[in-house]
Amino acid sequence: MGTQALQGFLFLLFLPLLQPPGASAGSLHSPGLSECFQVNGADYRGRQNRTGPRGAGRPCLFWDQTQQHSYSSASDPQGRWGLGAHNFCRNPDGDVQPWCYVAETEEGVYWRYCDIPTCHMPGYLGCFVDSGAPPALSGPSGTSTKLTVQVCLRFCRMKGYQLAGVEAGYACFCGSESDLARGRLAPATDCDQICFGHPGQLCGGDGRLGVYEVSVGSCQGNWTAPQGVIYSPDFPDEYGPDRNCSWALGPPGAALELTFRLFELADPRDRLELRDAASGSLLRAFDGARPPPPGPLRLGTAALLLTFRSDARGHAQGFALTYRGLQDAAEDPAAPEGSAQTPAAPLNGANVSCSPRPGAPQAAMGGAVCWLREKGPRRWGLPGAPGEAGLCGTDSPEGCPCPAPPGTPRLRVLPRATGL
Image (cartoon, rainbow, N blue to C red; front, side):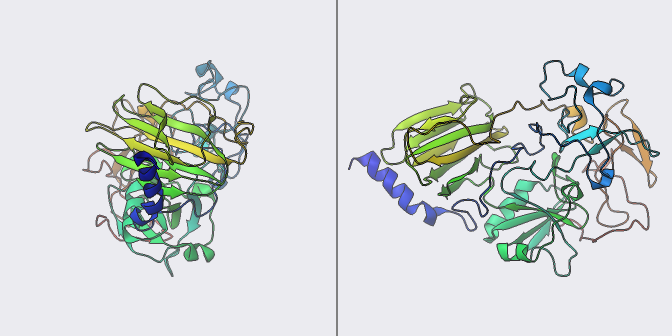
């Protein structure tokens, strides 16, 4: 056995011992292939055409009949956002999840989020009720005004837990699969609070936990399930500089098929390599200037070693790829149902931030002025207790000076942010 082959064998043998506490040897729940792989569902092209429970299940308006609004089939002539002569939910403006226009209500609200249970990244287990007695996840917890999904995942990985849950925009809880056995699912749209640390991510809701497997965004792992998903480090946050990560991939079968659902690296110095695990030979390499092919990529090896390195300036969304083992190296490489790649809608910064913008619409709440999203009024996240900073506003260090009106009912009052 040559030196490279021996090194590859030893890496596969000892990798499980090198994983951080809580790292997974594959998904806790076989992830299937979601309709949406991007965190905010910008790639959703399904046929849901009614809003979620908070929108009272109202029918969506057709995109070719919404010319009076910012988004319509006329504003998307190339079909990049998936708009057209239909009324299916879409996310053309880079919001936190798919939505649609509805007929105006007495409150003047003319758009609502859609409840699409299948439109989530694999590794997201759902929205769960958290009454606090007992808590839905029984492990350690913390709060942070800088909370993102990955901040919570990293915290729970370090604590050695399998699951991480985000709540109310700024709270993080850790737990195990046994906690889910007694858990109670809530509608997906109940987990609608924007993360305090990232305006493009959702961090649970009021008395609602958004629960993830901690393997999402880990820097290493040993993946042996028949099919699954591998994310870049720190996903769904952007990967950082000087990352050096490796994943061993060895599902049952004689060959492998990979499909990249997302690939965004900063520059040619940020590089993903695919090597044969037995020989160490380089099979393919991709970087910020050379992306992978848009369709399925079939490799005639049963075991693969993926390595990702970013340079000192590396900073981008990263990648998400699905894999599956092929029993026969000559098997038809067609992608499994639901895995077809769809173009992502470009983010529109004016609609994914609550930052002040000249001329943006405003609303008064509790004596404070809050800036609303341009496509119309929306319910901003209320804070954990009356008087505590809210999510959208203009003049505090967090950019969130909107206090809750006295007496605002809460499903569960969480402690003030203490930092994770």
